[in-house]
Image (cartoon, rainbow, N blue to C red):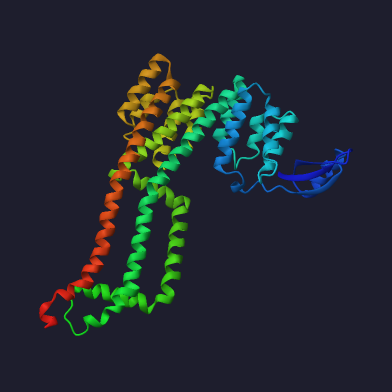
Length: 392
């Protein structure tokens, strides 16, 4: 089914924008004729493009629904308020569709599920659980906390990588300048001399870059695009994630990030009344690591057979003993969701410390590596000038 946006002419002469679901444009027009709607314009609503509904907009939408519901406003009135706010936004058709579906008696979770590219299965399941328990405002509060914290840590990781990327880019510009401009201008000084192997290598690189300068930058740009495309492939990402799990410096950070997301979402789902087997399946989707996802998938099969979660996690070397002991205690006391939230908070604090330590360590290491690269080129250029016998 596609979503069509139409403009309706009302009896008082005013125009009103609406949306309708249909398989084709002709089917949409037929539906509107049956509804006796005078249509002046109808187009395919551009809701397939995810960039119309960014992650920031999703967080804002979740927060606004939570605030309006908490203040006692009914669901339809809350959605209508949000729809009016985003009247000039590119994603306005989505808000209109949600309003129309809820007004027509459709459950809110099913209305959200119609836009699966924006509201994923985890989002829809938490809303459905809130509808079943009659605490939709609480479900949106928990959703907002999960989304906001996830976005917060993404920003922290991006900020941690920004400075090293800047240093690497600056070093690349300096090296290209040395090879294309400085070294060729000093080439006459090296003629007729017995050069050090390191100097000969640097001169050969400079000659090659100057001889193919016209193709160098386009080739470099194409290479960067190819590497970027290759890394974005799903299969490549899975292989890289599986490899990073065994890298000593990254192993701990990945474990903390994965467990932090997993147990926070799992705790919220269990507290909302979602069965543990379904909660494990939904929480597995936020781990973003195939190695840990496989562990949880195997755990799901064990839960169906009646085994305890702590026993199943104990079988995996990837699950820390702290997690196993805390889950075993929670299963005995019957406070599984509360204990999982405590686990998430513990690993959240550990992850924040690890990010800070990693950033503090990475900056001097990058400076050292880049300094060695530039220093090696400069040393290779200056080395022949220290040969006093060649000068005399």
